[in-house]
Length: 73
Image (cartoon, rainbow, N blue to C red; front, side, top):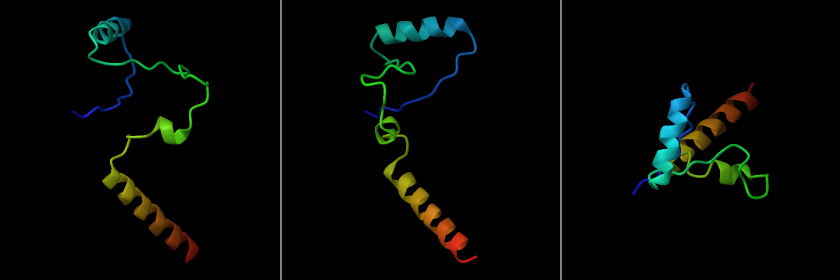
């Protein structure tokens, strides 16, 4: 089962009620900003799973090429 994390902006307060109902049915899990145990979350933990391994490798190679181009100027 693929568990994707989504960032949602509510444009209507009624949506919050619907999301809470989904959470009560254990269909989704709601994380509120600042709702962490220590108050400080490591960026690696915060964004873990945001990119696939392949996307991460492509991003790293792109960044390396950009750095090489910048250093050759």
